[in-house]
Length: 245
Length: 245
Image (cartoon, each protein chain N blue to C red):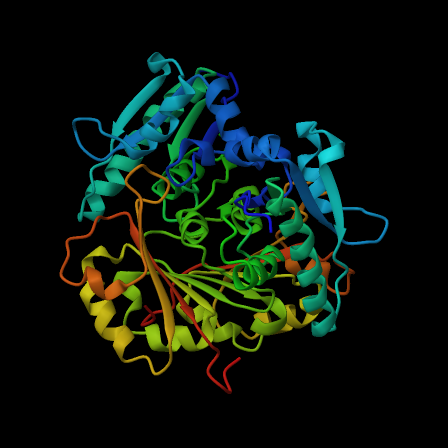
């Protein structure tokens, strides 16, 4: 049996899309590791995160695409994670370090979480290091010039599909609410916002940090449009309603 | 009257503390600008954000410390922001670009927000660019290996002083709750957590990304201790209580 210690598995956040918004640490780790694994959304191998690291000019021989097609079948996903972890651990066991790259931050709405938990459970002895990254929420706020939080303010981040029902309540309690992946419920969001009894500043941001990024401040102009998956809305109260907070 | 267009004012997030967690863009902008202004917490000029950029080896002649002592007097703070903006705009008007550096992200619990709003109000023609940074919340989660959010999960960020009363409710609704600046209410937090009727995974992180960083997973061991200002707690439910979400 191989008694060589495992090499390190790195979860590397490469930021929201602009290669310059990668940290210096992420760039260094990616240059140093033996393998870079990245998820692809299609069997043809297109990968958002791989596009982000392309300008680093790393040897393509050490980059490996892993197909992680979106599935609605939980059992199929679990099997995929297990297989990917097997592949990664096979390298670690040979002393080869592996980085899994992830758009934004590895622990914030990322597939890396599943790989991390699977590896921790089955191979607790494998060293894992996580490199945080700039999130799409921070990048969107910076692009749209929306202050997120003053010292005393609260912030909520909510997947839009799960958050619309409670939105009026969230806006009472939180100074800023990020609604992630708004594309599938956008018109419903507009209807919900019409029922909020005070002024709310809303900004739509899509594909932030990429050449195709777009910021829209008049949300109603987007009604009925087909919007991409990488889309979010930042909501912020113009004024605190009296008596709240 | 000087008709030369204003140079750009940059709000630059330099990340949570580790100079390597600065983005490549932040490092480039800081190298390119004419002036780097940074806030100091004491009149002696010690500055957390200045320590973060020190390894870049930038000319000290272009770095300028601005005393921004914490005040409980809102009027005094407003006057400070106005004076700082005057100083910055005097440079911009001469075609000299200025970067204001901020720990973490410029729009997330940062003094930059006040400068931004003051400048926008009085000098709407001044170009402002905001460079997002890795937040202390992302860095703390990465350090402590705490998954923040799976696809369907909600995240709340709350200043501890304002969040303890509503904490049981927040934990019902949010998969992960970040409590910022827990130092002044830590023992009260421990008492609150004892009343939560299900298991909550809590991790305390202080001074993340600095040589003095510390992660504590048994929160009770910190009872009665004096804790620093740069401290946060990540709370995450072990299991979803039935019927919630």
